[in-house]
Structure formats: C-alpha cells, structure tokens
Image 1 (cartoon, one colour):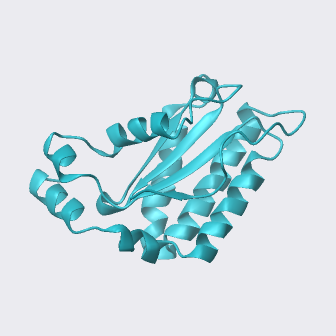
Image 2 (cartoon, one colour):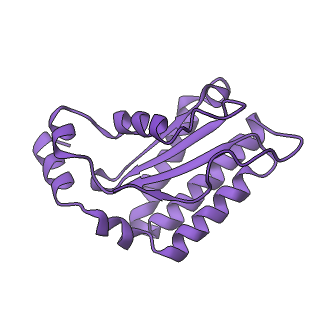
Amino acid sequence: MSITKRLLANLFTGAWHARRALNRSERDAITAAVKSAETGTAAQIRVVVEPALNISDVWRGQGSKERALEVFGLERVWDTRENSGVLLYILLSEREAQIVADRGFNERVTPEEWRKVCQTIENAAPKLGLAAALEDAVNQIGLLAREHLPADTQGDNELGDDVRVLK
C-alpha cells in the first residue's frame, strides 16, 4: 500500500469503525473462544483490535508489524510465567493481522504457521465478518497451543481473555 493510501486509510478510520466491526455479543463470542483455546494449554492469548495508527507514526513508516510489537509490550503479553503469551493484533485501517508470540511459542511454532493464522483473518474477514474470522484464528492458535504447549492442568489466567479495542 502506498504511503498516500496508508495516510488516508488511517486518517479516515475512527473508533466507530471498531464498534461497527465488533459489537458486544461478537466480542463476547471471541472472549469465549479465547477461554476455550487456552484450556489444556500453557497459552495466554490476547486479542487487540486497533482502528488506525497515528498519522505521524504512519508518516515515520510504522506499519502493523511494528505497532504489534509495541502493543505486545504495552499489553504485557510477554509477562507470563511460561513465556507463552500470544498477541493477535488487528489493524482495521489497513486490514492487516499480526501475531507476536513470546519465546515459549516461537521456539516451537514456525513463522509460516503464524502467517497462515493471519491469512485466515485477512481472507475470511471480508467474506464472513471480522468476528467469525477472529474466532477461527483464535481456534487455530488453540490447536497450535495444544500441539506445542500442552499443560497438565489449567494454570492461572495471566492475561485477560476479553477483546481489547484501542482508542
């Protein structure tokens, strides 16, 4: 996407886009999917949706990947006992999904597997809606967690399961 298109997309996407994209019942369904995906695993999944980037950040070249890394820190997804945090970040203005996983996951899950989950969202959202695409992606993360980070018992829920909508 050109810088001009990115600037315009981020300038004209507001908080109401996030409210329209995910209503309360859809956010609740995603929250339930997160709880289910974490069951029987060491995974701690955080879903964050952001309507748009600040124009000054876009101008400086920040994209969804850089912002996802920033949000990973701000949301303290890295701060889990087993280094098993996963951030599922959606930037609505640019219709991009990013996954940032802590080292407990990245030692076991390949970048291609994470990219497939992101592509699921990017491909399914226009057809099925963002909520259904996010639920499917969370379920895929849960399958990866069961394969790579199973747990004998359900540990503490270190990160909130609710969908965070920024701004």
